[in-house]
Length: 349
Image (cartoon, rainbow, N blue to C red; front, top):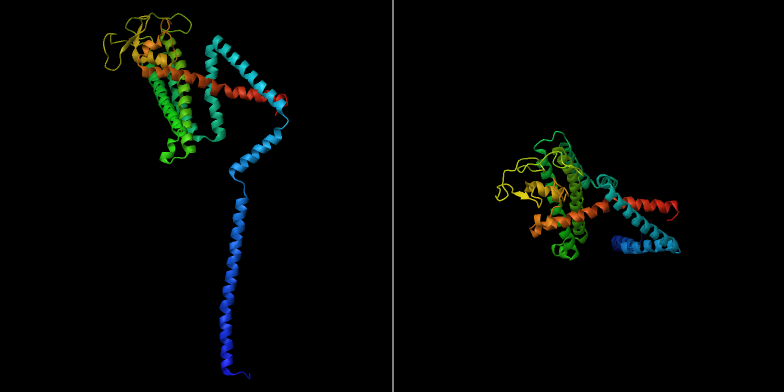
């Protein structure tokens, strides 16, 4: 109480000055603490292994797990090779001796095996296209197997399967070009990711090849049924009807355009055995229906003469590719499953 009045004023001023100074120091300390926390978090993130490091670690674990199992691996490889050879021999003999049952079983597997993987892996896009194709094709097969056969049915059947064939051919070509486009790096010019571009090409290529195989196989079955019902063709036997010169043995309809004339809608085609057909019918019979004999006398058809246009000969090569794909899709999963079963029985991992 003995201090002068101005001393009290100075002490109050010093107190008011020290208060904000302490607040500033606390704020600085808090900022440093936050900065240290952020640095610690960044260091933790840097310590996390990258995708490549994780792949190397997993690869090293696999090598460590299977180290010293070289003899077992060699035995598994021999089992795989032996199974592939035996299965190939059995399938070839089956196809030569009982072609129709082989084609039917293969077609059923082609139809069911992709459906199993589609549902298991949730490929709903493929499932939707598979469903639409199955519904329409089932109706077409139903029409083709009816007796008596409607006059419009053969045309409708060949038009549907020819449409499927052309669509699958176009989609397969686009998919192949997309894959080549990605391999040569052209996708980078359009700022398209390599994974997206390659996935797009592979999906289109698979769609084209798969539905090409299915369409040709179903077309072959429908061709046999319709031709047998019409009576001008009987698989492995003599025809039950005589063929007139102005009747097409594929569809059973009258031919109005002479061979020497040029038709407005389609021309008339004559085989080397002198039997004449609608050009649309005989092309559907040979290319789509996979028949290489005359629908009436079973004489060999010269496809080179029929497909005189060089661009059309690619259809024959495409058909051979589809035949190879049929084995890959239908029988390869069965063979791999058989190999795994043998390894499991023998106690091989």
